[in-house]
Length: 524
Image (cartoon, rainbow, N blue to C red; front, side):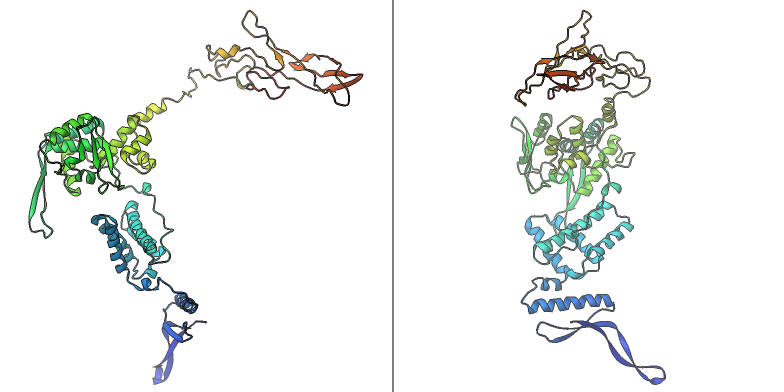
């Protein structure tokens, strides 16, 4: 049984008298798997030291029983080494170096913020405290989710690579980004998109530079013409291609000489890591064919600048077209807004949601309909116009079948207006439909006025032949009182049996056609 204690040591007290004083730190005494007494330093906190004592004793018992902890060595290694090996694993799996650097940097920042040096030091509560600090710094919920996602991805890799037994961050959930949006994108209107294309086509070349070598000793100047920018914007708005996907396109990626022109995005550059073949509109395909004339298949289709310079290029064209880069409600317009425009135009054109999902290349229909399609007030107004007018002065008739309530008169099949008392409709062919039951009511005669006469109820005897040797003798029809057939007296060889069978004739409009029971008459 492990025990915790404090060491005492002598010190000089008042008057030079020697006294014994306890240490600030607790210590643990336990026996290892060989029954050798061991003493290990604990913590200044008693509870933490007790937990460490329990772990030491449990480990000794496991080793004594032959159990080997395969994660023990991994727990002793610094987390920085695990992060380096995780980064290498991401790159070896096919992840781009840029993305591997990004997620490793985020996970490393979470670990440093939690002051964790080894795997046992990483806990969910510490990560939650770090994320709360990011919120206090003003970072959005989306950014905090990125940090949490990177840390959880690292922990999942630790478990999958058999470096850890459990994932301490498994139960942590991402925040709701809808309550803290910082960078909502706005779609382009049709007229705005046309103005942008014209302004880019008539505008000057957009030039920038980049380092020509990794040593950064020589600069390389590049540029994109106005005509190319106009085609670039049209391609993004008509296919929904992302900026990085457009950067990867070569002239050979376009197949423009077939009946249905297409553009192919290779799996290495597609976001969902699958080859995408997208159709092109004939008008755009014709303009691209002229733009690519004389270029090799391996040549870049468009000289798209880096992401930060792409935003500057688009803002310059927006300013030239007189379109603000930020809407009145705070939404921004950037290159990815062209993809939002593509999804919104598909919705407004009435394209089936599943077809829109395939064109947008989304994994779920929710992402297509919620994130990339924007409602227009005019479209919503048209949808609301389909509702009836509920105003008190509305003269719009409401066609309903009488149910015996309000002003509907049961039996005539006509519904009257709730305020005027006049018939709501005169073209209802069913309101004078003859009323009869196929089983028990004879079809009524129709008078010259076209109104069906009252049906004649028919009562049939119940066949009880073989019951106690009696057979029916006579059947007498009882009188009809208030639309209800009275009691039927049936004489059985001198014995009278009073059978109460009430065949009630409901008014017209009270129940649908039913043929199940003999004592029910349909009114339909």
